[in-house]
Length: 328
Image (tube, rainbow, N blue to C red; front, side, top):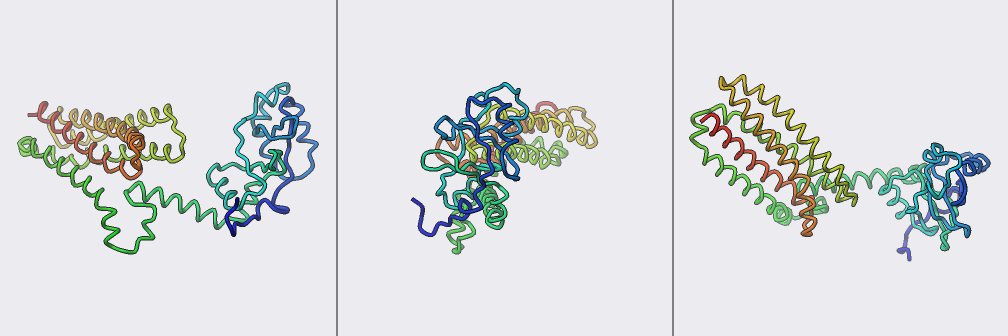
């Protein structure tokens, strides 16, 4: 049942387009194209809708896929059976959410028996709700940014400074802990830093590369979780591509390091340390959001601070260890 006050404009009157093409599941591509040519109306057609003998919507075929298929191929072999459809009594808020979430060009509208009665197209939606659409997209982007940097979605509605401080303080503790551990690692290699001052000069550059690449893969994993579309092959490619980018950056930094040190071993240390640390940061950034989701911790809030803390300390440990062994 619809909530009181829900508006129903898009699926009423002339906003519900009757310019659609329905075909039988056993029709061939040639038959479907002929029905399209004979269909009345002047609106652009984005999808062909497949119906069973009782007229119920059971599949959809994008026009581009239909045109590229062989003329004798059956619609049943081409259609997508998981149809995203709207009920004829859907309120405008649901229609809006469908367009923003799925980003299709049109949605079929069905009655209580599942028979298609029309389509609602993106043109009608944008014309009617352009301001709402932009506000919705802006709001979603803002919420994602807030969550990724450790802020709650309702941050802008907070009015009390104390409650704002208490919400942010836990993640500052993570940063403090990571910083203290990094200071401890640096203290362990104090003699190396005193003996080779150039080692300290390159610490910021070494750290920022692993941090940047780790946060990038974290963002990709968090986006997959948010969209509920986990693509493992894509995630592997993301980690590999990020690691290769880190290796390329390591080569550039190594060349710069050769200008500051007469030892050929120092550029080699820079290259190895940055390559290892950026690869590890990329892997952590890809895996931590899924690990936090498994333990029911918001991956957007928890992943970035921990990825930065872990990658910083592993980077420093790798960097100082290689410098000590190869140049000490």
